[in-house]
Image (cartoon, rainbow, N blue to C red; front, side):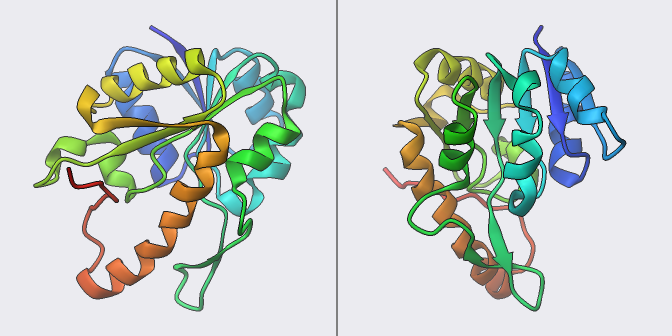
Length: 198
């Protein structure tokens, strides 16, 4: 059992919290109440950033002390939305939100994952008709191993998890969000994941 704080109680944060609790972890969800995020992060071993990516960096920097020496799992994508509310462009082109978080919080071990799929797939990967991929980006091998085990607890098979390397590789997975609006407009809001065919 691991003590986990989920920052963000929307569809992503809520589904992750429910699934991780079901897997036997002790999970706290921080809502927008003053001090809630700090209280949750302070007592957790792992913190999951499921807040909207456009404002994530500022929110996390404000938690610098609470996040010191913690594993921060970043599942957000920082985008500018188009008129229909779907992602239109990246806030950090040529870089990534995860890289900016790691640079701002050098004493926090940041791992990027689960950001290349619609949120229902994060906690139910086996429901897709083809094997999905979950990618890991991060500079700390032990942190990535811990997050790999969390993914397995969420139903991800070992062979579906690919370690891409350091945190700089998150710029590739974050850019994949630009596929999402086009797929949704073409096929509707049905669960899918960006996968590598092998």
